[in-house]
Structures are given as C-alpha cells and as structure tokens.
Image (cartoon, rainbow, N blue to C red; front, side):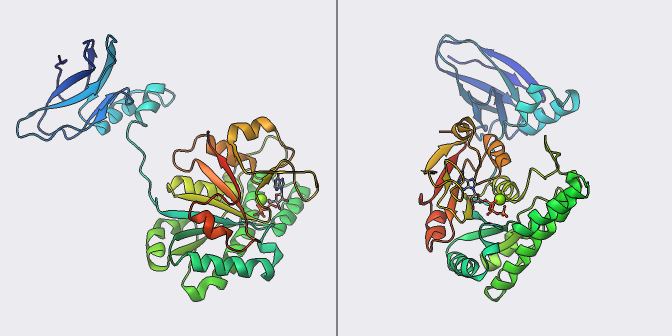
Length: 342
Ligand SMILES: Nc1ncnc2c1ncn2[C@@H]1O[C@H](COP(=O)(O)OP(=O)(O)OP(=O)(O)O)[C@@H](O)[C@H]1O
Ligand SMILES: [Mg+2]
C-alpha cells in the first residue's frame, strides 16, 4: 500500500496513515531534483532518477501511526518560503534550517592549540620539542595550529581592568598577545614552509594546507569589541581555548587537541592541590555536574561542545612529554578526553 501524493511547486502537506511501514510519495515535477520530508528523522531522500516526470520517494511510517509529512520540491525552496514568512523565533523555521546534513569543510584536519601560559611561556625547553613534533606530524597529517596568550595576556588584562576599560577593549589587546605567540611560532616553523594566517586569511586556508600541510593562527577569536560581556568582571570569556575550538567545530575538523603542561584534566589544579587525581575521560554534563574548583580548559568551551555538530570530543595532552601529540592526532587516548555526550 502506498500514499500517493502529487506535489507541484511549493510545500504540500500529506497524511500517511497506511498500515504498512513503507509509504510512497509521487512527485510530479520533472525539474525537482530533491525532495525533503519533515520530520527529517522519518524520511530524507532524493528523488529516484527517472525518465518519466513522475518520480517516487519512499519513507517509513510506524505501523498504525499517522504521520504528517511536509513535502517540498527542494529543501532550498521550503526554507526560502519559511524564511520569508516566519519570524526567526519560529521553531519550525529553525528546524527547517537543520534538515540538510552539515558539511564538514576540512574533515581531515586536526586543530592543535599550543598553550600560551602552559607551554610557550616556558621558552625553548618546552617550545622547541613541540615545534619539532608538529613539523614531523605535518608530514603525514594536516594541522591547524592555534596559539594561546599566556602570562603577557594576563598582565594586560589586569592592567586594562585596573584602568577601568571594558571587556571589548581587553579582548582586543589580549588578541595582540596571542598574535605575537603565533608570529613567534611562525618564525620558528618558517623554514618548513608553515605560514601564519590572520583570521581573514582563514578563507584561503585550504591553499595553505595543501601547500605546506600546516598553518598557524592566533587562537583568540576576533570578537574584539564585540566580545560577549561576562556575568562578572571584565575578562573576555571567549579566549584562545574557545577560539581554537570554534575553528575546529566550524570547519568540521577531525580532532581538537589542547597541548598543555599537565597529563590532562584533574579533580583540581594539580599545581596547587597535590591530592588531585587525573580524570582520563568525562562528559561535558558530568564535568559541569562535578563543579570542579578549576579547569584545564576555559569553561565556555564546555557550553560550545554541548551544541557541537562535528567536534564532539576534545583531548587535553601533555606537550612536555615527547610523542603524545602525534599519538593524540592519530586518535589515541593519551590524555583526558572530554566528550559532548556519552
Ligand atoms: N582541574 C585541572 N586539571 C588540570 N589542570 C588544571 C586544572 N585546573 C587548573 N589547571 C591548570 O590549568 C593550566 C592550563 O591552563 P592555562 O590557561 O594556564 O594554560 P593554557 O590554556 O595553555 O595557556 P593560555 O590560556 O595562556 O593559552 C595547567 O597548567 C594547570 O595548572
Ligand atoms: Mg588558558
């Protein structure tokens, strides 16, 4: 048994109340090349190619259930009509923008963040081995290398806050410091052909990656004076951990690895609590529930991970231990893995 619905241009409602689990929709439009059914979870598919203008699409309905589906001649046309007619707060509109699967822009790239305070500030003893390891890894894996700000960023935040300046200004001046660290890493890696890219040049990132296998960017998101104001105080909440994570998530990258100076996330800051123990793996919800006194990553990263479409886990790795970065890039569990969900 099949539900036969003839669809012309526009959105048509059809009720499928047949017993068998499979129903069929006929589309009478030789120009339509895509049909979307909502709810998308029940059926999403493209039209079977056919010589005839009458083409069919099958979708599943649980036996005995009535399912109302919306058939649009194409996802674009349906979305266009909703966007023109509904407020942005309309849940149907918001769902409609989600019917097409997300595309990963750089699916085989790993983003690594080189910590500012935890690594770069330690100077050559910490930086040179990490640079050597990254150069070695880029022979076989494509890397986007983000930088943190470190102690100089903290200094400028304290100075600007003491001068009564707002979050947006702190964000702008803090950016400069992460940018300096990106420049320095760039000069260290220049002989291996690794470029430093500014946020606007990220649009040419595919070219840089194809050419050299890696590129360096400042981890600070370029919000500057548009930085979100925190609940308390004036320190920019989205700093370099969040900036690097957002690059990985937006580009649909394979991995997000934070290179720091500890073996991972502990129950407390191991630098001032000797009883702290390592947490090898945890979910965002568990971590928020645990309400730890201090974290190894910026807290907004957890919130961003909750809504992640691509990068649903991150790993914190000790960059002071040789060899761990490569193993993490290759998917091994060598530090703490924080997952969006279990
Ligand atoms: N629960 C925790 N587990 C592990 N480390 C923690 C924890 N809480 C705080 N830390 C501290 O977090 C530090 C890493 O974060 P920090 O912001 O200093 O480095 P970073 O992010 O690499 O530097 P930057 O922010 O300058 O780029 C570790 O060196 C550790 O001392
Ligand atoms: Mg930090």
